[in-house]
Length: 389
Image (tube, rainbow, N blue to C red; front, side, top):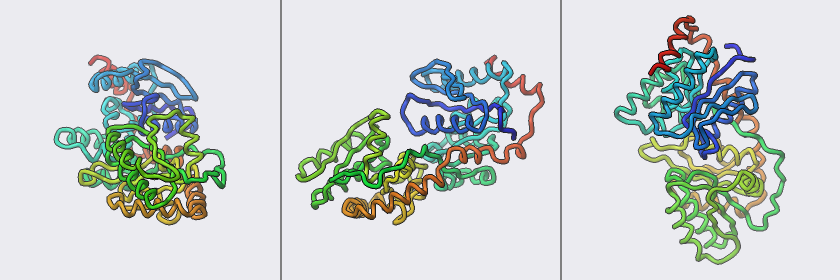
């Protein structure tokens, strides 16, 4: 498949400025394709749309907020209009399997990314729809080995076209050797949902503080599990001594960057729920922390458990065992030299293994051998058929 100057479409049901890991994924994948010299058009929806914008070699066609069905229709019509106008992409990269639905009429190699829970949870008609969509793909990109295993447990016939490709990070400037914090600072950055297990993290930190370990802990994010996390924070508020626990909610990009720069430990003891269907597929915030040189404490389940090498660049615990989380927190809080060693290893590992450009190369690898180009008549009919619906 040609690269320099060739067009590629990226399709998503979400986009910034709305929050979320998939929104980050969409932006970074589009930029990686643009860096390779491709002409990138992103078809997506956000609360800021409808709009059309061009920035950094990426054209954004934002169809704006609407019901799910209307979003699909708007995305399909926007792609059809581009198709009729003569823009024929070399490939279409859908950032989730549901985002691939409006791309199905366009006869181009279809790449679909799977992240975790969105392939583990569908049942009944939703599962049949997912299977129908993924069976049409030329390439399925799983963001971790754990995600690939989950997908193949449901659709084993896709093994030969599914590749595991870790997400990337934007590697920051060199991290100071010492943060200078008199009291170790721990952060958790995530959407507050049950599988993140943040309430258990708060209780572990509270237990450590009750045992005389000085810790400052900030939970950064918001979500459906916020009330349970807030209750755990309130239970630990009575503990006296250095440090404390706060919930910041949503913070600006500038404050988030400062929190990462000044953190000593990143805590993310995620668990899998619903028999493994509800899982953390990768863990972008974990990868970001590793890139900052922060040692991470993560759960064994899902993607983060394969990103962090236990005892090498972080600690891996059973998120369902409070004593394991508590022991890991206490160990790193009390041992700055060990923290520094793990953090240095984490940064080196992130620099070597988390690369958006490589992620996108793997996404397109081998597509030219898998699918032929349709004839011009078929191409024209595909776009016109969508516009006429």
